[in-house]
Image (tube, rainbow, N blue to C red; front, side):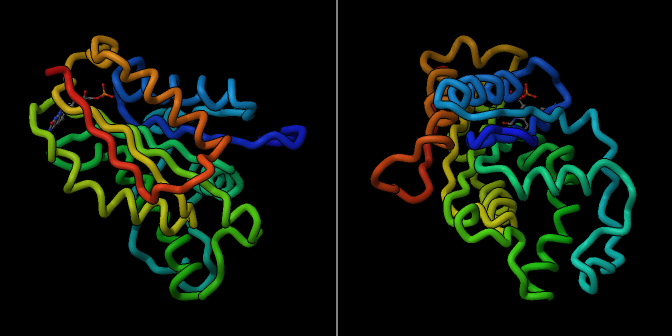
Amino acid sequence: MTDTGGNKTVLALSCSPREGGNTDLMADAALEGAVVAGAVVAKVRVPDLEINPCMACHACSRTGRCVQEDDMPDLVARMLSADGIVLAAPIFSMGLASQAKVMIDRLQCCWATKYVLKRHTVPDEELREARRGLWLSAAGMKKPDVFEPSLPTVRYFFGILEVKHRERVCYYNVDERGAILEVPGALDACREAGARLVNPPEVEEGEREWLSSLS
Ligand SMILES: Cc1cc2nc3c(=O)[nH]c(=O)nc-3n(C[C@H](O)[C@H](O)[C@H](O)COP(=O)(O)O)c2cc1C
């Protein structure tokens, strides 16, 4: 995202293999909210990219960079320069969908930068302090705590990207493609959260944790 004319930038990482599915629709709604709030936005369909699994070679512990030549280095650069990051990732097998997890594993270069090389992954202090993140998720089970096992991974994801202000909008009991459209207020909640990536609340409430359901 270049030439943003001074506007904030929001990057959405839509990780579900189901294009037009629930989390993809949630990502679109969040970006709509961000656009209305004045951001320049971009959406990446993560399953469409070539992202190989981390090989655990640990070369990044020496250089801070990954040796693999696929789509990930460019994506990392985009993640590190955005003002707002949307992680749209559904629950598969009681955790994050593997498309999201492979991408997060490949952020080992950011982990190494931060914890081995002891450098900031986002060198610009102003950007670093202001960056905001939003996790959007859907899960089929009628189980309010279905998102809990994924929370450490999502916190880790935002942590190594130096995104300090985080929020989540997660809906359980949402299974069929487009079921999120039937949840009253769900996409409006995503729009509002997307807008908050651009115009933060005056009083921070820490990590917001919202749950809702069809029932
Ligand atoms: C392989 C696979 C595994 C799934 N595992 C779970 C699960 O463990 N718990 C759950 O609540 N839903 C599970 N689901 C249902 C999805 O979370 C649900 O359909 C969600 O709405 C998908 O979001 P999407 O349309 O963005 O892909 C699974 C779906 C698939 C395809």
